[in-house]
Image 1 (tube, rainbow, N blue to C red):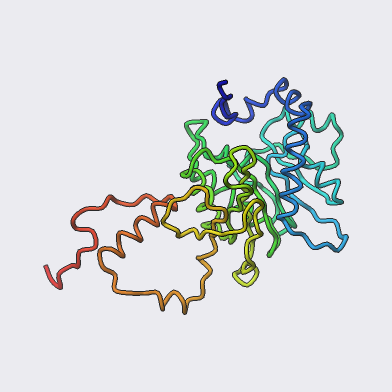
Image 2 (image 1 turned 135 degrees about the horizontal axis):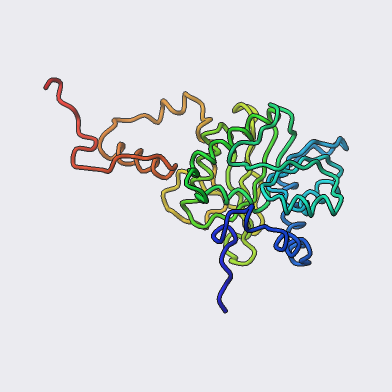
Length: 293
């Protein structure tokens, strides 16, 4: 049986989720169960203090409020952002408890700095990897999104973004964009070897290195971790760290060696994996310049 095409490959979200699709999505018992499970897991990874104090959370790509119901059910206040007016209309009809905003996360979130205690997103951020309009540049849209997300979060707060990247390149683009915005954290993959149960969560911490030093949460299905600098290229890696940028300067100095051709090629390849545009390798790459012309 032929599988249906991914929604983000069919049309922009504000067009794909029209009135008919929004109601169909919200009335599906299967979708409701999946959204509840994903939201509960995202809230678990958010690791909020269990002190009984309600937090103000942000639900990015909130849709018709299915994920927001999980936040309300756990005693939190929340603000939902979505680009689909049809989805928000259904949310209003359902009288969900969160406050709703109509907006494009690829243009930034537009919230005051430091007011959000945590953020979740279910199946939304990968849409930013598509150029749905001639004015859309995925790298710039991801930069605007992660930059504004970093600014609106309180220092030390976390964001948990459940994503469905289409391929390894999209995954690396999303992770590297978060790292460049200042976040620490990484990708946690539950059940990495199951095509049906596999779920990816980008778990990010906002704040200085002292607040970001905690290890990533353990994924379900397996307990091993994989560094972001691992050159094996294994897509099944369960945890991909993006916190190397916060290593102590002393350790960075100890790692410095003679910068020959192999070192230059290795660094260029690392930059390519992070999504940077790097000139192609040639026979002159890494060649030592003469003292004079």
